[in-house]
Amino acid sequence: MNVKDRFIRYVKIHTASAENTAKTPTTYRQFDLARLLCAEMKDMGMEGVFCDGHAYAYGFLPATPGCEDRPCIGFIAHIDTIPEYSGENVRPQIIENYDGGDVPLGTSGRVLRPAQFPHLPSLKGQTLITTDGTTVLGADDKAGVAAIMAACEELSRGERPHGRVAVCFTPDEEVGHGAALLDLERFGAAFAYTVDGGEVDHINYETFNAAWATWEVKGFNIHPGSAKDKMINAALVAMEIDGLLPAAERPEHTEGYEGFFHLREISGSVEQAELSYIVRDHDAGCFEARKRTLRQIERYINEKYGEGTAKLTLGDQYRNMAEMVTKDPRVLDLAERAIRRLGLEPVSEPVRGGTDGAQLSFRGLPCPNLGTGGYACHGPFEHVTVEGLEAAAQIVLNIIDENLR
Image (cartoon, rainbow, N blue to C red; front, side, top):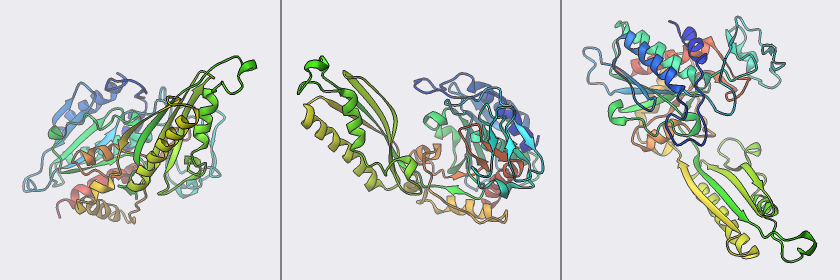
């Protein structure tokens, strides 16, 4: 089965994860793909194939004779799609010899346009795969799943020498749980790569430092006719809290290494209000300064309106994986050489988000991210090319080859 056929097969399986669920996986349907992948890995003759009770699917290719001394390399991709947009009844459109122009997305009324996605003309002549405008495509990250599986199928033929290869397909990456229960002892890799989105010439190893922040605001409600100098309107205090944060440091005004405060949700009344933020910065010092700013706002609001008016709760989520990945130069060196073998020049840009690799790197498994050729993830304009999928699979194989040098 080639990488295109694998990809089409996988995206038709509904695997969306769910927010605000303590169990793993957050949705039972993720087992459908996890168990299919285990069956396929067994059919290839892979060893140690196992799907655990949390929908982590493992498989291993033992080293070929004479290559047993090479370090074990791991490859990881996630099987879930985002909960915020439908991943059910995915109907991919396949456009061969794409002309670089507008693409109507089924009968949805949506159109994939170069005016919105300027990279599209660069895909001219390739085989483009899009949505029908009603769902996500699922290239994030079934493109990575397909690329890894296609590479494993090639290795399983026994015609290519290689060191030990470990594979794991994880659930719940889109809701931040993806790497939490990966069994590193079972996995046994010296280092690994997530294969999860972005252009195929990209290697990502710098992520945000990340935290979440919630506010609980208590007001004092009284009849508005006699409210002077007495009422505290919790909804207005919540708005004041947000107004104390720098307006230029929101996601819609930042790029590259610039951090932000992102208001995800706000609700409230005179009596009480809640705000929910995520806080991000690549620089560790600036990240701590952002958290100090929030604490200063809490003190200011309570001094102004009375103790207990505002309660801030902060929690760290993940740290910048560059801190760990750069300690093992071979991890990036292998990936760079693998990309150059395709005639491409490696590109490294900061990830304006997090990856499973960030968690894994701080658990002791250096784990940068490789691109899959996917674009416009997390919505109905998601698309990928067959050539990008094939290149992603080839880069996985090239890394395994370079590990023998």
